[in-house]
View 1 (cartoon, rainbow, N blue to C red):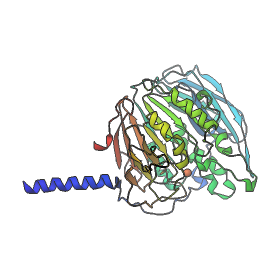
View 2 (view 1 turned 45 degrees about the horizontal axis):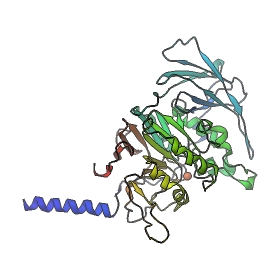
View 3 (view 1 turned 135 degrees about the vertical axis):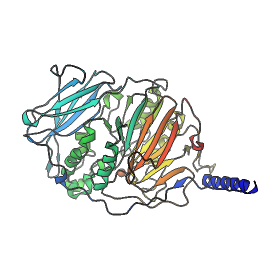
View 4 (view 1 turned 180 degrees about the vertical axis):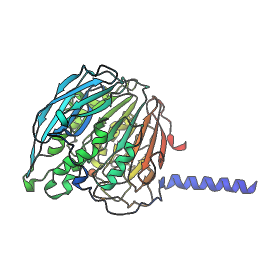
Amino acid sequence: MAAISQFIVLLLLISLANLCNGGITSKFMRKLEASVDMPAGAFPPPAGYNAPEQVHITQGDRHGRGVIISWVTPLSPKPTVVRYWAADGDGNRRNKAHSRITTYKYYNYTSAFIHHATINNLEYDTKYFYELGSGNATRQFFFTTPPRVGPDVPYTFGIIGDLGQTYDSNQTLEHYYSNPKGQAVLFAGDLSYADNHPFHDNRKWDTWGRFVEKSTAYQPWIWTAGNHEIDFAPQIGENTPFKPYTHRYHVPYKTAQSTSPLWYSIKRASAYIIVLSSYSAYGKYTPQYEWLQKEFKKVKRDETPWLIVMLHAPWYNSYNYHYMEGESMRVMFESWFIQNKVDIVLSGHIHAYERSERVSNVRYNITNRLCSPVRDVNAPIYITIGDGGNIEGLANEFTEPQPSYSAFREASFGHAILEIKNRTHAYYTWHRNHDNEPVSADSLWIYNRYWYPEDESFQ
Ligand SMILES: [Fe+2]
């Protein structure tokens, strides 16, 4: 009996120590080989004259009945048509939409013809086929529209960040691709890493588009701009930030009353997703600030219980990288996140994985010295998911001891899955690349802040 009570006391002491010193620093160590880009030849263009390539889709409207279909044709702008039909409909009666074409030049690179076609008023929860190109270059794909927006609609998102196009990136994408649950991807920024190559070699944007097509052509990826999308290089005459990204990746910002594709919002199933730009002005009176202030007022939690924000540079980060880079945005907006009970904040930028406790740091008023994060039941969980596997390699140095706001951290590549079950519960899992897909190295039942604001940390 005495031995049992001693054991219980020991367990209590261990859990208390965990509380004081923060959460878990996973001891799992991956091999620290360099990540190199896959060769361009790994992603040859599809066969056929002027075959459409780099196909990707994203949500095209406010509620999920619209889709933006984007593709590139290398030699000729024509055809511009996308034909589409419901899978359970008459395949001979095909609807048509036409693309708008854009091209751009970047230093010594000239893009091919970049097509964007928006299709609206699709049926909810319906599988559609779509077809691009002509003759022997015809290619067919499909997607499924989300269910009608509503408070208890189950929906599953994949979460990926900082992907790049290395062999590790390939493992991440293959892992996600092999998971049948993901219905759309929340992408936390940093796509191709073209800017890590001489003169921001924009052919890397093309190979990246081909690399991810196996997923992006079939389910919407919800885009966030990271620092590797800025492509600001005045030394080679490139003075327009975000030029390649904004030409290639369109988002439905106008339907969110935004004035920039770099910040916008959508409703999808039971989620309201707000995308912010860490690399655009967000101080008081700026367009992004003004927009976000109005934006929170539009969120109706009895319509979309789950409020998710994506921004690239994390606010809570206990790795020895990018110190304080998210701090000024946190100072501007954190109190709004608390007041509006944001459920989850997704970031990238740090090339590793971390999940926070529900904490806030909004009490400080210069003189009160209350400048440390504290547990806050109204605060979001911050997830850093910059572990896609890009060319810059892994972030494997932690700050020690692990801060109390950090619940779990591990220096491995991977991706996450968020399974929204109903208005109160979502099941969250993180999958490291070194495990088989069904294995989750970190998991948590996340409770909705509006409908069930309990503390999840004692599950
Ligand atoms: Fe980044």
